[in-house]
Length: 368
Image (tube, rainbow, N blue to C red):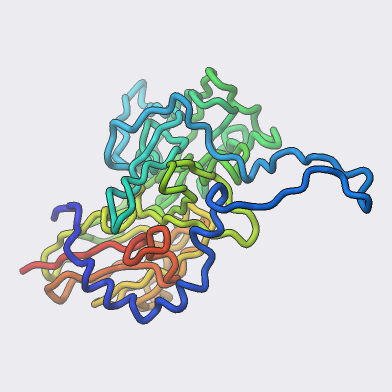
């Protein structure tokens, strides 16, 4: 079982998507990107508005600061995070810091797309924390961002003071630039979870501050041959300048969409053998719903939001709608050889700056 970059199915996917071109054309794209259109502004008070004044910039339209931000040395996000064992406690370290992240190499006339992001440990998504149910976990957060931040453990039962809600400061004060904060708790439940900032969430999470948290059960819940986690994210990036906007104003659409930090055709390919059982864990880390559709195989939904679905209640489907904050675990048996795709069925979400095929697509290659 290998996971490798895959570039060889663009033509097939383009044929699938061509029938949906009219739908994609209706979605605001490059013309609606801030900084990519000209607007007429009259900043002087008119006779009808004697008290008019220049407004302060909308923080939603302020790009992520990019001065001095270096390109990532890592090329892959959500990598397993090493830990140290200290007196029975698993100790992890996370550093929140700005980094330029390569979402997409050159594509159909587009240059390399380097988004300016806020990351954990220089990865988009942040590194994967993988532990076992019942573990005592300590996570040391160091803030190298220009703004305060925190970490919330999404879906995880933790003591109140470890919940990370720092804006408003309900469970802790924000972690200021240059400061550190230590989170410590015992992991009670197995399942698929994730962590993310809980300061200025409408800016910091879309800027990249999230990562997967996988908790293995104490007791075996069924064999799988491949266990793969997918984080779904969206981006607004000016492909000409690399300026990146973290928030999605009303009626606005992103122009890039990523699976584990990459847009198709830079996404990974899952390589499995015929007859193997595959588990895919979806994490909705962005602000948009993504109906994820699998070609070739029906699947069963075996867990939702980290909690197992009883055998008698498991639905058999080929599409699952992953909303923001949701997690779904699906399982299927790779019964047919060939290269199959899994993709979002909001068809604007399978484009790169309105060019198709791109975005939320990855391949599953089944061999004998």
